[in-house]
Length: 199
Image (cartoon, rainbow, N blue to C red; front, side, top):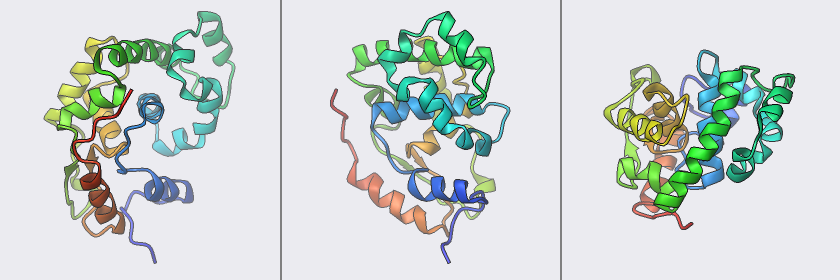
Protein backbone atom coordinates (compact mmCIF):
# COMPACT_ATOMS: atom_id res chain seq x y z
CA UNK A 1 0.00 0.00 0.00
CA UNK A 2 1.25 3.49 -0.86
CA UNK A 3 2.37 5.48 2.19
CA UNK A 4 1.11 9.04 1.80
CA UNK A 5 0.64 12.20 3.82
CA UNK A 6 -2.45 11.98 5.99
CA UNK A 7 -4.32 14.75 4.09
CA UNK A 8 -4.56 12.75 0.85
CA UNK A 9 -7.93 11.28 1.81
CA UNK A 10 -9.73 11.01 -1.55
CA UNK A 11 -8.83 9.68 -4.99
CA UNK A 12 -8.50 13.21 -6.41
CA UNK A 13 -6.37 14.39 -3.46
CA UNK A 14 -4.19 11.25 -3.64
CA UNK A 15 -3.59 11.79 -7.37
CA UNK A 16 -2.66 15.43 -6.79
CA UNK A 17 -0.45 14.44 -3.84
CA UNK A 18 1.38 11.74 -5.81
CA UNK A 19 1.86 13.58 -9.11
CA UNK A 20 2.19 17.25 -8.30
CA UNK A 21 2.29 18.45 -4.69
CA UNK A 22 5.83 19.21 -3.55
CA UNK A 23 7.37 18.51 -6.96
CA UNK A 24 9.69 21.45 -7.80
CA UNK A 25 8.05 23.36 -10.66
CA UNK A 26 9.67 26.14 -12.68
CA UNK A 27 7.09 26.29 -15.45
CA UNK A 28 5.57 29.78 -15.50
CA UNK A 29 2.15 28.65 -16.73
CA UNK A 30 1.91 26.06 -13.96
CA UNK A 31 3.13 28.57 -11.37
CA UNK A 32 0.46 31.06 -12.46
CA UNK A 33 -2.17 28.32 -12.33
CA UNK A 34 -1.20 27.37 -8.78
CA UNK A 35 -1.15 31.02 -7.69
CA UNK A 36 -4.70 31.40 -9.03
CA UNK A 37 -5.98 28.15 -7.53
CA UNK A 38 -4.45 28.79 -4.10
CA UNK A 39 -6.06 32.24 -4.09
CA UNK A 40 -9.39 30.74 -5.16
CA UNK A 41 -9.19 28.30 -2.27
CA UNK A 42 -9.29 31.04 0.41
CA UNK A 43 -12.12 30.07 2.78
CA UNK A 44 -12.85 26.84 0.89
CA UNK A 45 -11.47 23.29 0.85
CA UNK A 46 -8.73 22.26 -1.56
CA UNK A 47 -10.99 19.41 -2.73
CA UNK A 48 -13.53 21.98 -3.93
CA UNK A 49 -10.87 23.75 -6.01
CA UNK A 50 -9.38 20.53 -7.41
CA UNK A 51 -12.86 19.49 -8.58
CA UNK A 52 -13.18 22.84 -10.40
CA UNK A 53 -9.67 22.85 -11.84
CA UNK A 54 -10.75 22.01 -15.40
CA UNK A 55 -13.37 24.74 -15.16
CA UNK A 56 -10.67 27.23 -14.23
CA UNK A 57 -8.48 26.10 -17.12
CA UNK A 58 -11.35 26.66 -19.55
CA UNK A 59 -12.36 29.97 -17.98
CA UNK A 60 -8.86 31.43 -17.91
CA UNK A 61 -7.43 30.48 -21.31
CA UNK A 62 -5.40 27.54 -19.98
CA UNK A 63 -3.68 30.01 -17.64
CA UNK A 64 -2.01 31.86 -20.49
CA UNK A 65 -0.81 34.96 -18.61
CA UNK A 66 -0.91 37.30 -21.62
CA UNK A 67 -4.42 36.21 -22.64
CA UNK A 68 -5.77 36.57 -19.07
CA UNK A 69 -4.15 40.02 -18.72
CA UNK A 70 -6.36 41.19 -21.62
CA UNK A 71 -9.62 40.07 -19.96
CA UNK A 72 -12.30 42.78 -19.82
CA UNK A 73 -14.96 43.51 -17.16
CA UNK A 74 -17.52 41.99 -19.59
CA UNK A 75 -15.60 38.70 -19.54
CA UNK A 76 -15.64 38.75 -15.73
CA UNK A 77 -19.44 39.33 -15.89
CA UNK A 78 -19.72 36.21 -18.07
CA UNK A 79 -17.54 34.19 -15.68
CA UNK A 80 -19.85 35.14 -12.81
CA UNK A 81 -22.44 32.89 -14.54
CA UNK A 82 -20.02 29.94 -14.90
CA UNK A 83 -20.86 27.27 -12.32
CA UNK A 84 -17.66 25.33 -13.10
CA UNK A 85 -15.60 27.86 -11.10
CA UNK A 86 -15.96 29.72 -7.80
CA UNK A 87 -18.19 32.69 -8.61
CA UNK A 88 -16.65 35.32 -6.38
CA UNK A 89 -16.13 38.61 -8.22
CA UNK A 90 -13.17 39.72 -6.09
CA UNK A 91 -11.39 36.42 -6.70
CA UNK A 92 -12.14 36.47 -10.44
CA UNK A 93 -10.95 40.06 -10.82
CA UNK A 94 -7.81 39.16 -8.88
CA UNK A 95 -6.86 36.61 -11.56
CA UNK A 96 -6.72 39.37 -14.18
CA UNK A 97 -4.85 41.72 -11.82
CA UNK A 98 -2.38 38.93 -11.03
CA UNK A 99 -1.82 38.17 -14.71
CA UNK A 100 -0.90 41.82 -15.29
CA UNK A 101 1.38 41.75 -12.26
CA UNK A 102 3.07 38.58 -13.57
CA UNK A 103 3.73 40.34 -16.89
CA UNK A 104 5.60 43.04 -14.99
CA UNK A 105 7.46 40.46 -12.86
CA UNK A 106 8.44 38.63 -16.05
CA UNK A 107 9.72 41.84 -17.65
CA UNK A 108 11.87 42.64 -14.62
CA UNK A 109 13.05 39.16 -13.57
CA UNK A 110 13.00 37.15 -16.81
CA UNK A 111 10.27 34.81 -15.56
CA UNK A 112 7.81 34.33 -12.72
CA UNK A 113 9.87 31.28 -11.79
CA UNK A 114 13.07 33.27 -11.29
CA UNK A 115 11.20 35.69 -9.05
CA UNK A 116 9.39 33.26 -6.74
CA UNK A 117 12.30 30.81 -6.50
CA UNK A 118 14.67 33.64 -5.55
CA UNK A 119 12.96 33.67 -2.12
CA UNK A 120 14.50 30.24 -1.39
CA UNK A 121 17.78 30.91 -3.26
CA UNK A 122 16.54 28.65 -6.11
CA UNK A 123 16.73 25.62 -3.77
CA UNK A 124 13.75 23.83 -2.12
CA UNK A 125 13.51 23.91 1.67
CA UNK A 126 13.48 20.34 3.00
CA UNK A 127 11.33 19.60 6.05
CA UNK A 128 10.54 16.23 7.61
CA UNK A 129 7.39 16.31 9.72
CA UNK A 130 6.21 13.28 11.69
CA UNK A 131 2.69 14.53 10.92
CA UNK A 132 1.43 17.04 8.38
CA UNK A 133 -0.30 18.77 11.32
CA UNK A 134 3.16 20.02 12.39
CA UNK A 135 3.69 21.95 9.15
CA UNK A 136 3.31 25.71 9.65
CA UNK A 137 0.57 27.84 8.06
CA UNK A 138 3.15 30.49 7.17
CA UNK A 139 6.85 31.28 7.58
CA UNK A 140 9.20 34.24 7.22
CA UNK A 141 9.79 33.16 3.62
CA UNK A 142 6.06 33.13 2.82
CA UNK A 143 5.78 36.53 4.54
CA UNK A 144 8.50 37.88 2.23
CA UNK A 145 6.98 36.26 -0.88
CA UNK A 146 3.57 37.69 0.00
CA UNK A 147 5.06 41.15 0.41
CA UNK A 148 7.01 40.79 -2.85
CA UNK A 149 3.93 39.75 -4.86
CA UNK A 150 1.77 42.46 -3.32
CA UNK A 151 4.38 45.06 -4.32
CA UNK A 152 3.56 44.17 -7.95
CA UNK A 153 -0.17 44.48 -7.34
CA UNK A 154 -1.06 40.82 -6.79
CA UNK A 155 -4.26 40.08 -4.87
CA UNK A 156 -5.20 37.08 -2.70
CA UNK A 157 -1.54 36.44 -1.91
CA UNK A 158 -1.50 36.64 1.88
CA UNK A 159 1.25 34.76 3.69
CA UNK A 160 -0.89 31.63 4.32
CA UNK A 161 -1.87 31.44 0.64
CA UNK A 162 1.79 31.97 -0.31
CA UNK A 163 2.92 29.14 1.97
CA UNK A 164 0.36 26.77 0.42
CA UNK A 165 1.64 27.89 -3.00
CA UNK A 166 5.23 27.19 -1.91
CA UNK A 167 4.21 23.69 -0.79
CA UNK A 168 2.32 23.05 -4.03
CA UNK A 169 5.17 24.02 -6.37
CA UNK A 170 7.92 22.35 -4.34
CA UNK A 171 9.65 25.46 -2.98
CA UNK A 172 9.24 23.65 0.32
CA UNK A 173 9.03 19.87 0.72
CA UNK A 174 6.38 19.32 3.40
CA UNK A 175 5.67 15.68 2.72
CA UNK A 176 5.65 13.79 6.02
CA UNK A 177 8.87 11.95 6.84
CA UNK A 178 7.11 8.58 6.51
CA UNK A 179 5.50 9.49 3.16
CA UNK A 180 7.18 7.69 0.27
CA UNK A 181 7.01 10.87 -1.82
CA UNK A 182 9.18 12.82 0.64
CA UNK A 183 12.40 11.27 -0.66
CA UNK A 184 11.27 11.55 -4.30
CA UNK A 185 10.63 15.29 -3.98
CA UNK A 186 13.90 15.77 -2.04
CA UNK A 187 15.83 14.06 -4.87
CA UNK A 188 14.11 16.23 -7.50
CA UNK A 189 14.97 19.31 -5.43
CA UNK A 190 18.67 18.41 -5.51
CA UNK A 191 18.58 17.81 -9.24
CA UNK A 192 17.12 21.23 -10.04
CA UNK A 193 19.24 23.20 -7.54
CA UNK A 194 20.42 26.65 -8.64
CA UNK A 195 18.81 26.27 -12.02
CA UNK A 196 17.32 29.51 -13.24
CA UNK A 197 14.43 29.19 -15.64
CA UNK A 198 15.02 30.70 -19.05
CA UNK A 199 12.56 33.16 -20.38
